[in-house]
Image (cartoon, rainbow, N blue to C red; front, side, top):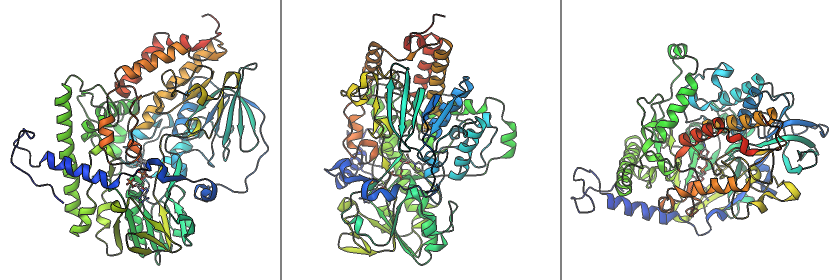
Length: 610
Ligand code: NDP
């Protein structure tokens, strides 16, 4: 459908618009209503129990064993992705010698360890996404780096900061228990360890537990099946660069059309005998424009360049006026629309109504461009129509590709729209069923994403017992209570990295670096002052909560009207928003000032006087 332009009306005060906002609003609402499900998040199931094999590690040695450890380290970090690596690096720089990282995977890398599907890249510019480039002495080879290069960089960070010797891989933390007499944490794991640590930092990520749709019959499928975060190259052949030669005679079903599928589809389309792509909601697919790093540009970089570039990117994408846009890509050009995901005070000087109207019009214009791109690339008009996203830009994770839409011009690729049936209806022993048609396939690949925002201590899978054996969830029975998102009264010397009661951004690795730097500085001062505990008082937590609530922008209406997905809790967004309202740039500044103004004093308990 294309929305026709109509004559100007009172609700459409701009006569120069070449579209009708009312018609678009109505179309968006209708498309959302087609997809909303009453079972919300309950439509999904985890990759545990009988589906445990979906989460098996295809890369690590399944026979690996080691003796349980009962030793003591100064800092123990749960999670070896960029959050854990940054925490370890910043602690090392602060002088901490005894650091252990533990991770369920067989190496460092986190999301880049698990996700190795064909086509994997990061769609945030590599020069701002890959952390610690100057420290490690590395310049990425591409503007948008392939996953393997990012994974190797994670390993290089671990080598550079000497983290391998103490690291424990293929090890899952199963309990954190505070021992007040010794002022240390007991960390239990699934390998029988009972390690002791003065400080524990939990950096377990936000999208780390793969999820499956609860499609009836999913367990009856007799062909091959796996999740994109555990790509089975022994079945497909090839590697992350493609060349999936073993699929030449196979009919493949891919379920899901999020940021992962966008990168996978061109390879499956090229290599499978036939690809059936099962779509419920189309992604917005904007220009990618990847290119190799210009060696002259790389040579011209002056010390401090990466921090400058990261900060510039963060400012631009959070709407802060700056003279230059160093990254200058599809993220920065759509900056204004991102406030709907990450709050910022950048445009608060404009009256709310005027601001809202301007946003909405800019959003319609952006999405019209995205839809026009579909028409320009996809030859079959019926397929093109199905591929058009009808929602506001930040309702769903934007994606970027110069190959995805082109794949639908191949004769061996079929797009199966499942919006009217709220997704794939059924899976049988040899087929995927939608409406009255069963699509017989040899293989079903799930590109169905991850449990959002919950891992580690937030998921309950890593129980935490603080003073007097109190469970963290008991202390948080009315919702999380923290100072700055990092620590909680009653749980001394425990820090968490992540978005809780903090400020997120699309370049989340930058956010993690600021958090890691802050935690390392607090730990450094605790060591220097011989503080027994790092722990906020309840009043400081209450004050932080009050700060978060005082200015919280009301994003409920926007999110509730969005097409369902993990950004809005499947169409049921929380009414309260507890992110720092002034956005990440202001949050980082607040942390810096807090440190400079002696704020650390507030959280050092039983410290020696300076
Ligand atoms: P998503 O959660 O974004 O996508 C899951 C897909 O599965 C959706 O298209 C969803 O449809 C579909 N789906 C779920 N259930 C069904 C069903 N029953 N029938 C049919 N379809 C179904 O997961 P991704 O792995 O794609 O991405 C997760 C996140 O990982 C991204 O949002 C991004 O943050 C990150 N990522 C980042 C990349 C980068 O370059 N930086 C690259 C890849 C991922 P519907 O939308 O209708 O729910």
